[in-house]
Image (tube, rainbow, N blue to C red; front, side, top):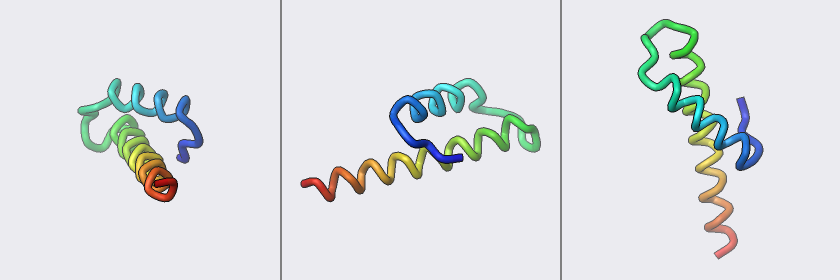
Length: 54
């Protein structure tokens, strides 16, 4: 999963909020892990871009 823009980021964040606390071993838990990874990558890229533009 790759977040490409702010709209994708907002949707991913909302979905992660919806399924936060999913039980271990469920499809929702796997989805949550993928969402959190994609969110972190997007945030890291955004911070890197901000630092480069300083």
